[in-house]
Amino acid sequence: MVKRLILIANYPADRQESMIRFCTMLQQGLTKNELKVQVIKPLVFFGRMASTTLKGYGKWLGYIDKWLLFPLILKCKSLFGSHDIHYHICDHSNAPYLSALPRDRSSITCHDVLAIRGALGYADAYCPASRTGLILQKWILKHLTKAKKIATVSQFTLDQLIALNGGRTKSGWKVILNGFNAPFHQLSEKERVGRLKDSQLQALLHKPYLLHLGSSLPRKNRTMLVKMLACLESRWEGIICFSGQAIDERLQEAIDNSGLGSRVVEIVKPKHELLEALINGAEVFVFPSYSEGFGWPVIEAQACGTPVIASSLAPMPEVGGDGALYADPNKPEDFAEAFLELKDEGKKRTLLAKGFENIKRFKTEEMVSKYINLFNE
Image (spheres, rainbow, N blue to C red):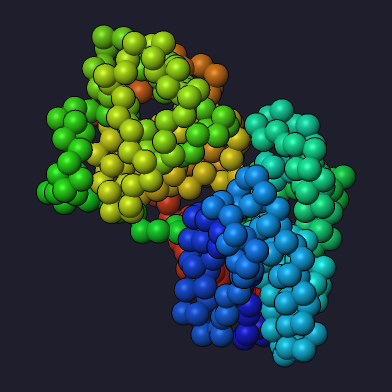
C-alpha cells in the first residue's frame, strides 16, 4: 500500500492556474485519506531574469529551469530517497520527468493530447506548433507513452492517446474523471446580486446575458457567440458576457463587424466568488469549443443551476451527459435555436435536474479514491 507520495507540480513562473488547482485538489484529497503528501516543483532560478517565461528569451530560461536543473533534483530524490515513495506527475506536459523517476513507482495525469496532436498536424486539435514546438511535443509523447500508469481525464482523451501510441494500450492506463477543482454552488438571489453589486457590474443586474468562460485561443471559438447573438436578432435582447482572458483582436473585429458592441461585456480573470455569481446569473452558459481534453466549465455551470449549451464535439457530451444541450460549433444558428428551446420552462427545469444528477459523477472523493487504486496497482 502506498503511504507516501510526491506530487510533481508545474513550473510556477508559467502560471498555469488550472494545473495549480488540480494539484492542490489532489494533494488535499490524498491527505484526507491519510497519505503523506509532498508537492515539489521546479525552482524559478534562471526564469526570474525575464518578465515572462511564456515567450521570447524568457521561455528558454524557463526551459533551463524545467528541463535541465529540475530533472537532476528528481534523479537525486529517486536515487537517495526512500524506496516506499510513489511519484505522480500532475500534468502530462511534464512527462519527460519520468526518465528521472523509478518507472514502477511513478504515474501521470494526462489532461489532453491537444498540443501533441496539433504539433503532429491534426487540424481538429486547433493547436498548431512551431518547429521547436513540434520537437517538444514529440519528446513529451515519447515519454508519456512509456508510462506504465496513466490517468486520463476522459475516455475521449484516453482513446486519442491510444491512437497516438499506434493503437496500443497498457493495463495501467485508466480513465479517472476530474473532480471539481473549486467549489461551485447554486446561490440565493440575494447572494448573487450582492456579489455583482460589489463588483459594480450593473449591466448584468438589469439585463439577461449569455456567459462564456475561457481563453482567447482559437479552439475556444468565442466569435461563435457574437454570430449566435446576431442570429437571435430581435427574438432576444440580452447581452454577452465574456469572462476569462481579455477580448483579443480577432474577437474584437467580429464584435465591431456585427455592430453589437453595446451588447458585449468583458470581465477579465474574475476571482472565484465573482465567477460563481456570474455563472449563477447567466440565462445560459455557452461552451462552443472545437477541442478540449475535459471541459470543467460545463460541470461548473451545471453545479450552479445554469442551463448549458455546448459543442457537440467530443468530449463535451461525455462530460455534460444528459444535463446539457449540444450544437454544431460551426453553426451559430443551431446554438440560437437551442437557446430559444430553453424558453420552455418545463424543458429548462428538466435539463437543470439532469445537470444536477450529472455532476454526481465528478465527486472529488471518488476521483481521489480511484487515484489511490491506480497508485497501488
